[in-house]
Amino acid sequence: MKRHALCVLLALVVCALPLHNAQAIEDYSPEAIVTDTLIVRPATFVVTAFGCVMFVVALPFAAISKSVDQTADSLITKPAQATFTRPLGNFTELK
Image (cartoon, rainbow, N blue to C red; front, side):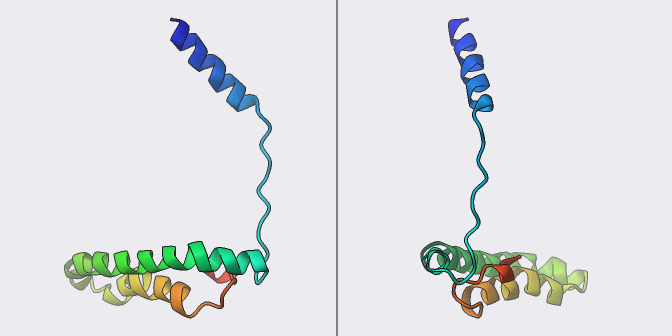
């Protein structure tokens, strides 16, 4: 019973803590370029590779429904553009 009361108390304390809004990084700032280089580009590269694998898996279903172009665009083209053609530090094109 003590453990349950402690968990409830800790949950209430965490909920009562003030939440601060995270400050957005401005496009093309040094912080944006470093974040893009170290975190976002590798992540979008992984998403592109995973999208290629998922496209191969989804290809028979996309062919049946005649949606191969839309499927390729969603799974491969958009992530690849975000990885390779988007200007460094520009996050507005990711939306």
